[in-house]
Image (tube, rainbow, N blue to C red; front, side):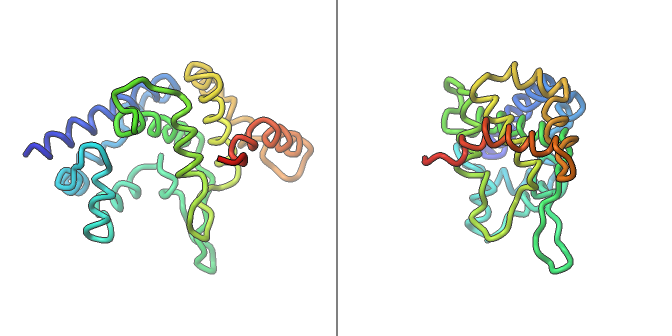
Length: 215
């Protein structure tokens, strides 16, 4: 019973932190409904059973069973996970789709909330560089042979996390609410006009070096 109570408290704490970030971004409905599937029997029961306290119950379930029923359900129900947007082409090659901006923003909020509740500095002094550091080392490039990010989606995430690291949460929140990232990376991301090349040059100059430099 202690595991079930511990898991419940943890997911509530996470939901609160994500909700705060979503509200700051102007995503009120997403802030309220974020991760509601975690309270379903399909997700809550196995995650509580494998509750670790300081690490993911999904990883623990995968180690024992080879898969996680909770994760398979969760990623199919929540649009703020990139795996929801993975498709297959005619040759059955996995192909990442462009993620709508509002779900990219919820994804960023989710990473912030996860870091504050599950991360190595959970409960300690928080640094806005942590989402960038985690994404750069764990999430940006897949160890597999296929891409996990559509180009413009990755470019927008890259820039938001660099801005978060360099300028802080209020700066990023203001830009999200004004539609800055969506305008730059989605509306102008076309190979057919000069705007794209100007945008690509800016992206390479200001952002890409953060990710390509030696660790």
